[in-house]
Image 1 (tube, helix red, strand yellow):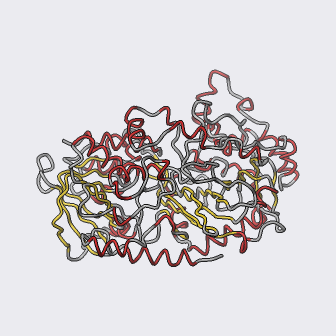
Image 2: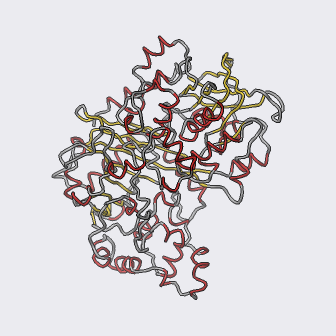
Image 3: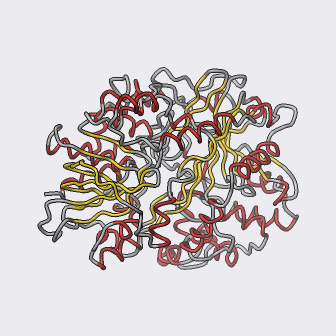
Length: 608
């Protein structure tokens, strides 16, 4: 596999990080014409270096950042965090207070968008696009006026997805949901045409498994005893629970799914328990070992009858080729018109953004990347302070700017480490908010003949790091054409929801362990894992990893989906503190683009 793009791209970003914020536009333009993060492959997401200073602040309590360059920059608003919520906050601020108001958005990553990451791959001169995080606009019709008005204003036409998403793609190509059992865990490499769970059902148009429960249990690479147990699970359900009907709902809310498997159904086969643990992935931000029966049933874990996850009025089709990165790009275009060509979100799909435009002195809204905020403090008593000092690190050097107001749109658990003198009750509440680790790997293939041969639309993979692998969403829009035939290049998505090694361990402990393990791996480790996965799953006569895989992008999100804290800690944590307010998904307790937008609107409205 070629690594030229990965190596050179990484060096390019490292060099460019020295110059965001430079007001010498001539020099900046010449250098930054090469700066284009979406095209980088290798380790992305929260890429190496993006969290270094944040970890120094949170873990080591670092406060001495060396001499601080006090910039002569004063803003009406500084936004900490350039994800969808942060970008929306900047947008709402100008909508409320005027387009002439000066806004600076600071982000520690080398690209804007936060989890809404855009991945680009190039094969034979053709650009293939995928999401590296936030996938789709979920249930957009259920959004409120705030969300609808923003989407309309930035040029997102919801009805367009009815034709952009090819619902017949999977049926036309006979692609369905299967399960891949790997040799390392299950003793042999085997593909069974049954998902054993409901997870694949969210992909609109994906064909169901072709085997009956009886045949699927018999085909699974388990012992004779294990096959019998698996069939019992597949044919199980709430009717197997021996409690009075009027007490059933209370029972399933208070009893463990794993206890149901072990005690009610008598499962002790380790292979089945592993299949069960990895059958929900990102539906409930943990393995099923931590779920109640009710939660496991709602997300279609192993043994529960498949159901329609989304109703007919809200199918899972509202997906740009780069996922919700298109929303982030449309917001940036709205506030910084010179960054790209295009009148609406669809016209921006193929647009190559000019990153040199983001931090120009002449902009009323500026975006400064590679800049980690380490301290935010009021100039005087928070109740009547007229200025806020914001310190950030760029290229290992400390800088300070002033703002009249600040919106914190970063992770909630970082805010107590950044904002000085927060009331202890609020700081404690913010520390209780957490995020589950998540990994999206996008892989570009020169063809998908092997996927076609094996009839794989999505493969559940309980023995692998990536527990699900699927053909990327079939969306064509804005001049971008989704793959047409098995002989054409394509992108496959691989999803990993890492858990702790100890089944049943507390959620927070599992998150910490999984993050540590995730961040300790090098790109070569991920490449070898993906090589083993694809080579074991696909027929050798049609797939050669070294010849057929063009590039790999591993999007690691050590802090991925929002996990709400206990009781009313979310509400306490998001309250205003002087002229500092808090946006982000964490403050809603929901990992959703609509929530990110709503929280941004609230945060801006709380400013005086």
